[in-house]
Length: 497
Image (cartoon, rainbow, N blue to C red; front, side, top):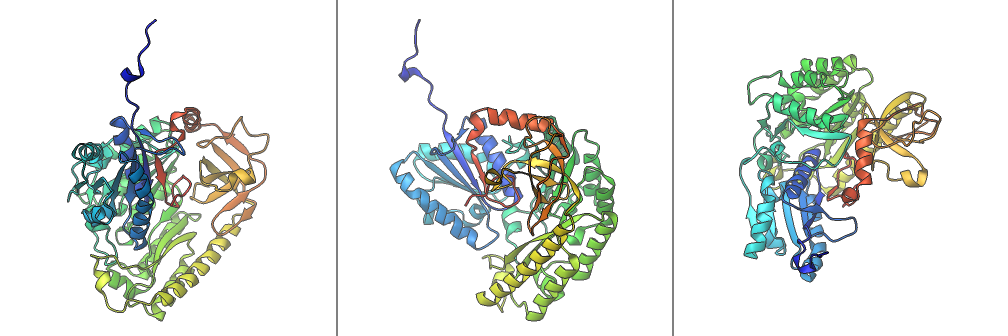
C-alpha cells in the first residue's frame, strides 16, 4: 500500500479572521468578505489560533473609530514582525476615507480596500504577496453590487438582506454618503429571491437593510416600492419575522405604516433616528423634518400597532446646540416614550460641513448633557419594560445574546418587538434540547432598562428547521472558530473590541 509523502501533501488552506466595527451594513459586508475568501480557498481560523489573514472591516461614523482601528492595528505589529507571512487588510468606511494614509500610519498593513470593492479582497491579497508591497485599491463607485457576492452567513436563523446601498441625503454631521456613494437600489425580484434563499436554508427572520429604506425605489421610479416589498415578504412561506433599518422621517409614508400593520410577519418594531428634538438643530443638521413631524409619525405607528417598540438614535452636543435646544430634545424623548435609544456625543468628522461650524461645544458640556439624556431614557425604558411583567412573549432563541447565560443557567432570545429576554429553559413543555433558532413562549417575570427576564417554566417549545441547521453547524468542527468577529450591540454575537 503506497502512502503519500509529506512533501507531496497539498498545502494547508490559508486561514482568516474578520474583525467588524459599526452598523449592520458593515456586519453584512463582513459576511460577504467571508464568502469571497472561502470561495477563494480560505478557511476560518480556529478559535484561539493565529490567522494567516486578519481583515479589519471599519466604521468611520464617530471620531474614536480612528483611534480604535489604529490601536488594534498596533497590537498586530509584533505578530507581523514575528511572522512576515501574516497579512493584514483594512476595508470599510475608514479605509474609503483614509486610503493610502492607513499604510503611512501603519506600514505593516498589506491591503487597503474600500466600500465599493469588497469582492477584490482575494486578488489584492495575492497581489500583495507576489509584489511584496502594500496594495491600496479604493473605487469611487460600485464595481459589483455586494449582494451578488457569495456570503458566509453567521446565523442559521436570521439574516440581513441589503435592499440598497448608499445615501442621497446631505446631513451635515454624516460622512456616510461620501464613503458609500449615492443610493443604488436593488430590484424587488432580486431582494425577494435572496429572502427566499435564506428561508430555504432555514432562516426564520430577515432584516432589510438600507441607509434610508423609505427612499427605496427612487432609482427605478416607484415611490411605493418599500411598502410593496414589505407586503411581498408577507407572502413568503416559512418567513416568520421581518424587520428593517433604518428609515428616515422625511420619507416615512402612511403606506409603509399600513403595510407594517397588515403584514403579519412584519415585526411590531421601528427604529427611526430622531437625532435632535430641536427644530433649530435639525435645520442645522439638514434633517428635513421637525419634531412635530417626527412625533406625528410615531402617533400613527402606535395607532396602527399599539404595542410597537420604537427605538431611535440621538446626537448630543451638535455645534451651536443651546441649553434650550437640549431641553427640547429631552421633552421630545419624554413624549416619544422610546423603548430604547442609541445616544451619541457629537464628534466632528473631517470632510463634513458640521466639522467647520462655529460654536463647537466644550467636552464637559456635551458629557453633562449626554449623562442627563441617558438617565432619562433609562428611566423611560425601565418604565416601559416593567409594564411587560406578567405578559407572555414569543421568543426566537438566539446564540450569543446573553453574556451571563452560562453563569445564570439561562438562555436568551428576542421577542417579536425586538426586546431581549433572558429565560430559564425548564418545564414539561420543552421538546428535547432548546436550540438557537427554536421558538418558545414564556412569561416575563422581571424588568430592567435594557433586558427582561423570564424565570418561570417555558410554556411552549417549537423545534424548527433553523434550530436543526444551527445544531448541525455547531456539531461540525469547522465552523467552531468563526472567521468573523462582530463588534456591534445589535448583532447576535458576543461583542469584541
